[in-house]
Image (cartoon, rainbow, N blue to C red; front, side, top):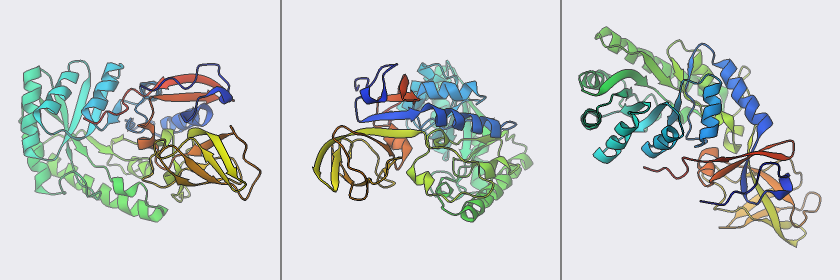
Length: 368
């Protein structure tokens, strides 16, 4: 585990860099906006974005019914931290993983997705051996072309298999259109979710017509959740990145009615070298960010641009602004918040220039 980069009461200048920081003002406003906008529908935020029990508890305190995570080890970290309702929005394949998941259901409500009959059998066996009940959802591929079964008879077949399996309780359908979250134009996102909604509605009607209960249709993300909320089909929403935001979400063009969330997550770095008038080097490189969505953006500091990274160095172009000084703190917006968070053991929570909290990232590195 990394050493704590700061202590409560420290000024910003005392934070050891590089450090993952949350600006509490925007962060708390993001929490409140989502909670207010989802009254009347179940909110189950996706905790793969933050991997932090302190943040999960803040979401639950504002009315969330539970959280989502993506791995059995993530689920274990949150259950161990006291979260009592967790949905693994992923397929869990293999006896060891199924057994871990079933063990968690002794102290929490635990849900899981299925898209194959063999997984139903494995999960049923694990739940029966543990003497517990797992909630199960049929994952429907509504356009993401990732996991899930295509809309049609296979959905009904899986629902029937779950309904007849000891230790499993059919809760409904997972219908997440992940590919729509970063479509740049509002009309593109709206069209993608309209198609997903149509598929989800048709599959719910298919189950109900066969006499199979479908209590919950769950899905949605930070880029589209308002469409699912207003669809009349979705009962539960799973946005995650809204608490932090990132550079890639910032590239989405907002629709006229889109609720805006603020950037609250930053990597704070220090200038470690100023070898030329047009170049400065900071202590945050490839090991400090996820680069799958591009380079980080320099925040609120004119005349500096992050242009290159190596393992432990970030290169800033500084030819167009005031001189960069040795030791200067640079605040950077990650390209993709989720995998960037996974690089850190601690989140430093700051308000008005002072460290107010240092939160452990309990589910960091939870890959299994």
